[in-house]
Picture (cartoon, helix red, strand yellow):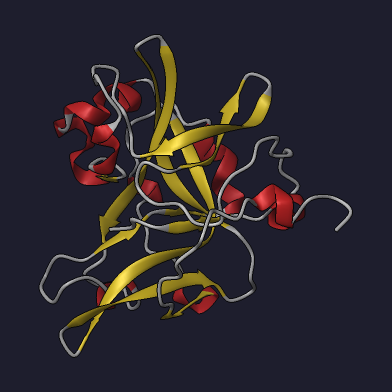
Length: 222
């Protein structure tokens, strides 16, 4: 399950010809952290700052986000947290540079990063929600996952055993199809990504003294 990722950079956003992200965000995101989510509105593609971990409309606080940052696509209708978002086709994508998984080496977990070989950003399927808690508007999202027991790369992660999961990656050419979808049948998108386009390696966790915002590093003119 993906519990940590690096969002796309401002440079990658420009390379993909996506709308400009007008708010600041951190280099790395963990559950309950905030990041830019891409979705489709009547005005076209838009970015919104959301919490990593879906906060359902019946929630009374944000603590649930630490338990709802991933959602199994097979059981979405069985989980009250995700039913409303699915029913209303609230599909978005998390645009990432790299996401992290645990690989067990000699019985010990190591953090490994998965990224495109060409260094480009890519899209992870997401569901998003909007709710109100104590008069505050809360926007949040969860990454959708699939079984990966037969995937040549993702099956090497997580604890030893027969439970292997992978985020669902939306190909660039199907982005608009996903974001505008008006069906809860996600079968055609539940495909393991092409390992020829991706690579992975051991990436030890970095301790930041404070978050390093994307807009400071990749602002125009630098």
